[in-house]
Image (cartoon, rainbow, N blue to C red; front, side, top):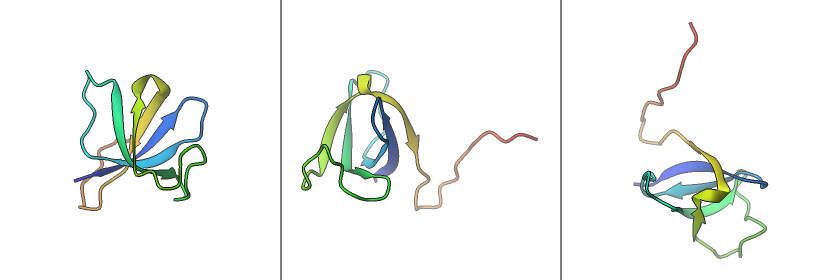
Length: 80
């Protein structure tokens, strides 16, 4: 089952994609499926028919993991 993420790339706008598995500590690349802008449009630096890219971790600032459609609960910090 894939997970939707927002990938923040250095010196670029964030993009949305799906990942099959969570990255491991030893990984140097991340596989991104269906890369697109956050509004769903094609990315200007990729061909319009690209469905999978491998991105080096050295170019990624951080990744946001979006809540799943399966009703998974997102745990976050709450200020009381």
